[in-house]
Image (tube, rainbow, N blue to C red; front, side):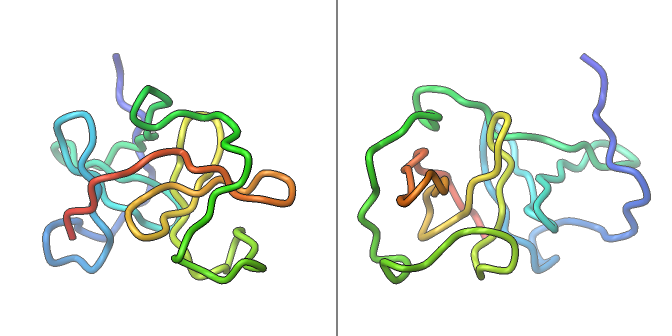
Length: 115
């Protein structure tokens, strides 16, 4: 499998870079402007959290969460970090993935935030 290289990346990711780090599939990626960047030699690869049993992509019929107000709407600029998940974007809220779905949020599983 080849790299899905992120072009023109001039920021160096690491434990003290200031970006949220997420562990998945045995490695750490860094959330940066709605992308998951994975250090790979002299470049960064674009990763996506897989849809699986731990992070499903199904409707959960409305997710109650203390991470935001009931009338909060996820989207660009909402204050939560965007996370690529399968073929869609979720939002990181208190260690789990929220997916905006109609008039509610679906819970797309927990993630391991390491910084």
